[in-house]
Amino acid sequence: MWNQSENEALSRTIAAAFVTPVDPTVEEVTEIKTAVSEAVSNAIIHGYEAGKAGLIILELSLTGSGKFMISVEDFGVGIADVEKAREPLFTTGDTKERSGMGFTVMESFMDKVLVESRPGEGTRVTMIKTLDGTNVI
Amino acid sequence: MGILFEMVDDILVAILSGELDHHNSGAIRESIDRTFDTFQARHLILSFREVTFMDSSGVGLVMGRYNKTAKKQGRLSIVGCSDYIDRIFDMAAVYTIAKRYPDTVAAIRELREERKEESLWNTSIK
Image 1 (cartoon, chains in turn red, blue):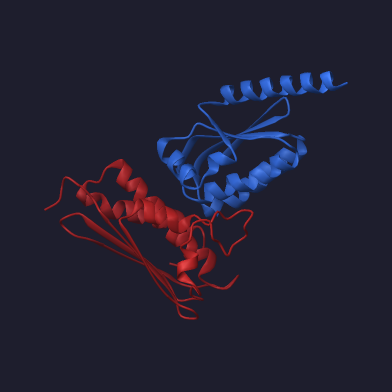
Image 2 (cartoon, one colour):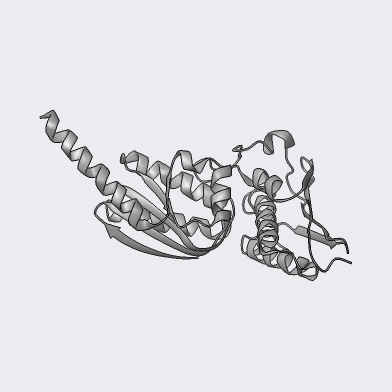
């Protein structure tokens, strides 16, 4: 999908629909939607230079045992200092309006968050959550 | 994302509804700021009772509005949060800059109490 903010809602809907087969709880779906919203928003806000169009690729997978994985990838500017970026309240955005809480929320709502990035090449954020669903095989 | 406003004394009540994410937080922010200035409000109450989804953009929205009320020595109050929204606000320590109330009525009541105390204090200084 393209890096326009309209796609934040679309990403949430995609993720929520994707995990439906394992019958997740409302809470689990909400947590996944929120984490996905954070990752996709980050890619849209920071991934590419201002005004430039760029692609954001979502990759989702779900195992029969309820292990859900989603990765959000862009091919843009990359993160110079990943550790700094993951610090709570740190933001390279407008400090008056951006909270710098994106990664903190992702880490709180998902089981694992992996960030791979190369300046000038792009960023890939991968998140995993094991769902206690009832339809697991 | 919809927004309704009510003005009580010098308190602006903003009732948010729908989904609050990065995409629509800009328009919401402008709408609140514009209304706050137009009605020369001093305090702001943000109601999240009808908010169906929120990510950390909501935190940014609150933090930005805090600056607005602080400039007028006013207070920022938050009402109607679900457990999940509360959790996000707690994570970001929002309740250190905004006070949480169960509903708008409780917030207004306390703001009025404080205003009464304030004017009593000011008259006694004379």
